[in-house]
Image 1 (cartoon, rainbow, N blue to C red):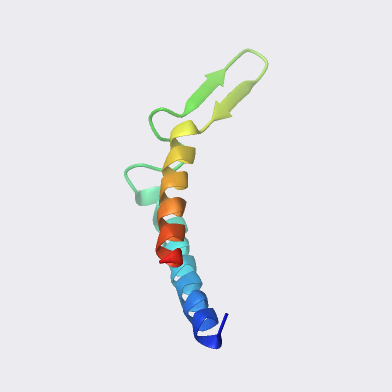
Image 2: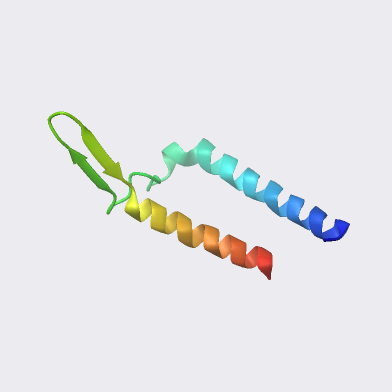
Length: 73
């Protein structure tokens, strides 16, 4: 791995961190929030609750797979 590849990787990681920071900053104003999507399982009982964000996990998996695919190209 040459210095050019390391530099390119650092630039891509920096851009990803900026985008992630913007999403966290503006996350409350977005129409759909990750973790509260339709299809996420939330069961509330008398003595506890269970939450499994299955749709959120699927969306994050697709997005991360696409990003890794782009990096490998």
